[in-house]
Amino acid sequence: MTSTTTFDPAPVLNYLSLPSSSSPSPTSQPLLFLRQHLPHLPPSHASAFSNLLTPAERAALPLIRARRLAYALHDPSPHQLTWSHAASQEPMLWTAHGGPSSGLSPARLGEREAQEETEWTKSEFIGRRGPGGGGMIGNLGRLLGEFEGERVGEAERVARIERATRAASRVEQHGEQEDEDMDSLSEHETSSEEEGGMTAADAVKHAFERAVRERFVEGLLEWADYVCDWETDCDGEWERDGEERWFDQEEEQGRGEGDTGELDY
Image (cartoon, rainbow, N blue to C red; front, top):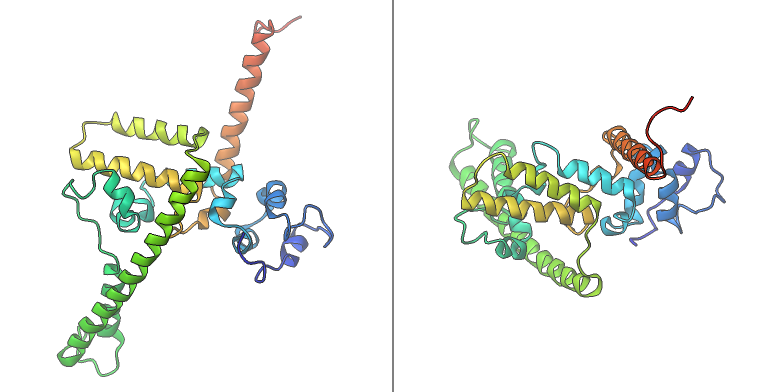
């Protein structure tokens, strides 16, 4: 779990009209608490549990996994889960799927931040000349951009080494996990592949993005934004799908017990 020092349970309990002695406790038993109350919490209150539970720990909650799955399979794909963004964050995974030999060129670490720093200097730095800057200001913008790119790049390199070490440890301890969520991803991938033939580069992107989505649902992308954990936009659709599966199972069980499916008079 993450630190509890920045978590205040009072707003959550007040919203749900629960006493401070409520059990399970939102502070000491957050998973049990969310299992019962997450469907009733708005994002403004539910997101506070990010201070108590890591994305990987929250993956134990079916509703959060369903929200992540809906987010990951959204069309168009979220930018953070596309190959162009994730390849630099997950270089070992990118290499394992043949990325370096595919001819594809993902963005370099710190490239976006460097561009933003340069643009800020051009547009906001005191003493600029004209809408595009000029003179020494232009040189300063490029210099600051390069510094920012190097800083972010180095920080990301250190972070990804740490992530790789932790990921290897998790695999040794827990092994691979397959469940209904991964089946849904497989169905999505199969339908995408059937839309037409893919080039070798497309196949690399396709396989890599599928692996990224799997890790996202499991909460294993430490660099990713998991704000979708607390969003309620897709809950209605998920609940309807769940109800349909439940009724289908009930119908199959009934027929298995001798029910003909016809009304008795």
